[in-house]
Length: 104
Image (cartoon, rainbow, N blue to C red):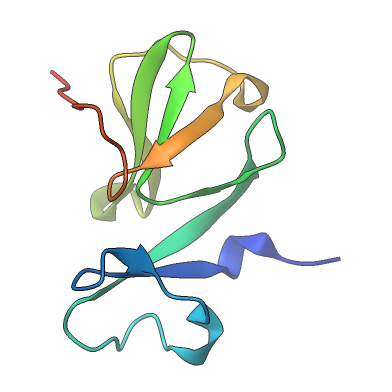
């Protein structure tokens, strides 16, 4: 059994891509230009791991997964109503999505 909650992916801002070997980095001590995104430990309806920064389609609304320091946990930013996780569908992330995300 694996513990996906403690997985990270690392985005390289200069090269505009995710690094191939995130396990070679210490997420809390990254060089400038690299961004760590932690896994929530959850999967969407297709079995895709959900990470901080992911964009999800939930009941026809786009939502972004964010970390909230004040709550010490992940939150969904956007306009969708509450829905069970088995209705979540990862459609991209904040780095590669081509559509606009404007939330009130």
